[in-house]
Amino acid sequence: WPPFAFYRSLSILNMASTTTTRLAYRLSDLRGGDQVMAAMLFLAVETIIFLALAYYLGQVVPGEYGVQRPWYFPFKALVDRFSRKKIRPEDLEGSTRNVTDFNVGAMASEEELQFEDDDVREERQRILSGNYPHDAPLVLKNMRKVYPNGKLSVKDVTLATEKSQIFGLLGPNGAGKTSLISMLTGLYPSTGGEARVSGYDLRTQLSSIFLTMGVCPQHDILWGDLTVEEHLYFYARLKGIPVREERAQVDRAISRVSLTKFARRLSRGLSGGEKRRLSIAISLMGDPGVVFLDEPTTGLDPEVKRIIWDIVQDARQGRTIILTTHSMEEAEVLCQRIAIMAKGTLRCIGSQLRLKQVYGNGFRLTVSATKPSELGRAMGFIESILPPGRHQRLDTFVSTVSYEFQLPSETPSSGSNEGEYTLSRLFERLEQEGKEINGVEDWGLSQVSLEEVFLKIIREDDADAE
Image (tube, rainbow, N blue to C red; front, side, top):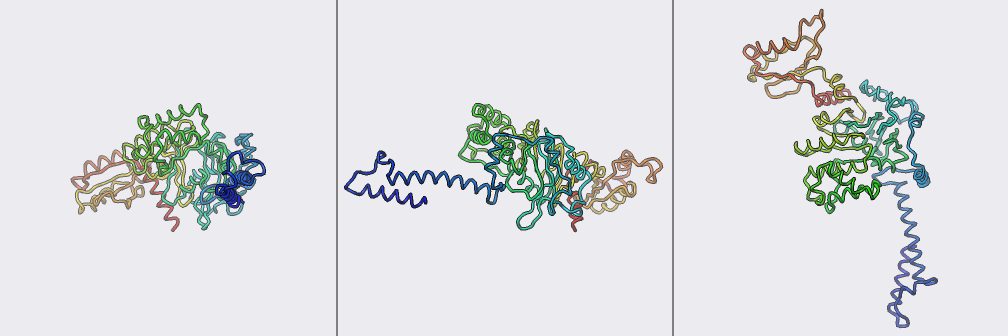
């Protein structure tokens, strides 16, 4: 037992140093049959055994963070190390399960899934049938997370991304975005479903996924006593980049995020925007196929945001970037495809144009009255010139004397009972009769924004829950 061996060796050494019958211990005294030598050998062997046991238990019985691995994982890791086998396209198709194939409790009920958008259902069927690009960097099939307290945080999310694409994952607080990202990055184990990152299975090939994935967390994880380039060297070696290529990759990463003149500055001396750029550079080390950016511009000023947007746009070539953000402007600028989550489910998925067509309902007209007392007359005038049944007064106030109206984007067909209605005629009447006769001070017309689409989906979800 290590403590006894250590104590015994110290006791013998102490006795040797205090006795007058012999000299103190020398290295030449450490030979076969010597008790101190035997104790040191036992300690060395036990050190190796306990280190291996600690590593094994850390993988099989993880703490708060980490994904539990099967008890036989050392043998599987050995096989994977020599085979380096990726999931083949035919393996993906062959292992595809239908919705009814999942075990009881692994699928959300029909009642839970009824609020899904048609595009979400199409995406689910596309993935479950294997009808997606075989080189898709990220594929999720019915991913689910149930916490020990019974809270269902992620309900059977199914989707696939494409290369050279920035995929926006939006949703209010508590929607399940963080739980989903935590599962995909190996922070928490999934309760059910399947995921493949760069062709590797999330459940059995997590160590390989770590080498092909980059993560920029919401809060910077940096060491104040390391310089910018020392951070990048550290992560380059974690990613297994060959030593002969480290210098070139570090220089390229520093140049990509415009931190060349700060390469040898300690991270504690960087500004908030410079630290975010360093975190993004770390996530791009090793040329990962999938990069997760968790609110990369939160708390930054507009100028720094623009710089980071340019960096992210340049970095998307050849990889998938999963972007979570609360900034609808950021999502509109960066994302080619967007998914909105609410209460753990995927509510809608598609391009910005598609989401606006489905949820936008045309244009938005903003009207301001000349003074508060004229607001009622201005509203009556506006409602009189809009076709009945094709407009809606919103409950959102722009100011104390302003209301917003939605206009349909289509023009009624000939023969309809709505009469001749065009936007040009609306403009004409507003200009001729609005201000002088009906108390309209100012007005403006705009297309529905992504933020309005987001708020509408969340409001509908809250209303359905009630």
